[in-house]
Image (cartoon, rainbow, N blue to C red; front, side):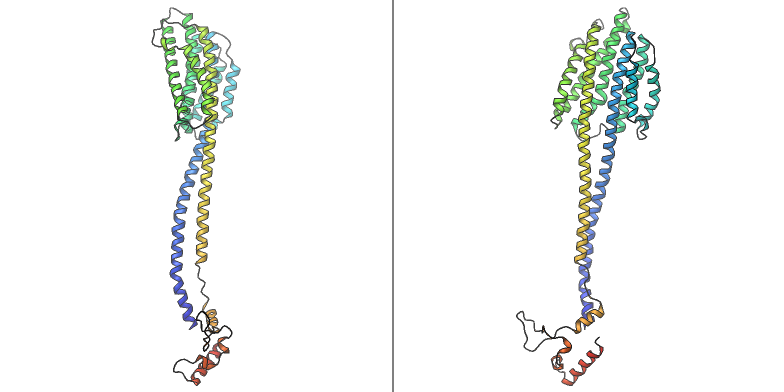
Length: 397
């Protein structure tokens, strides 16, 4: 019967349908999980990169502020007019980076507290030792702020050793060299003005030793970065300024006198000229290192964005493949009434009418056009066959 044929077809298709659904689930579940993990990781990486990019700008402007404060300190200690305009411009440059508005950085609060003190310092008229003490306190706080910004921004985080060593030099070594080189000139000048003051002599000698050791540590960190980098531009960009800095530091703190006592009194004018060279070299190294690290961050951002697009594309492909699989295996069984009508029009077997493939059904006649004797079942008389045909014709649409 046609109804039985339809039901049988549906039962045959049901296992295929179940297998298709299971295959879709096995395809989509891992793809969705993988895509979610990749997107979460990409979002976290992009957030870190944005923090690092903003932190790099903060560190660069704060380093310039340290240089301006060091110059102002030297002028105030000598009794000259401090370059207040340069300090004020450096403060405003930090403000333009939006450091005070960064709610995600603890350094923002520190800058908000430090800035009024720097404004007062730029207008200070103190000289000599008082100026040295006042400037030193605020300069130390600014250097500490650079370290806080680097920690809050994750600048020292990364899987590449060259950028780690480079950033360590940028946020720690170079600002320290700026401060120590300026203080050595200031303390040496005060020691020369008070030759009988043992405290001034000891302070100058101590800073000289600190300067020599800090320069050696910074140079080692820079060379570690150069030896591990895959960049073709970092080495040529840093080497000339690094050599110039080494020469300036050696002029201020020669290796052969680092361990000698405070009796060794360097010439203040020679120190001042070497300090200018060291300052220029430090600022150039800071500029180059900032630009190089900024390029590295931009490349990482492009990679992360590309990985995110790849994850989305793979998931979309999995969804499309799953849809095609469901479409191919969908249930194509006709409704019961349609199947019944189609079954009554099925071609019957003709006597001796075999085709080339062994099919014995006629291709030219419908069921209702065939003589009743062609429908006779085994053991059925012609009258019984005719009666059955009439019943079929009566119920047929």
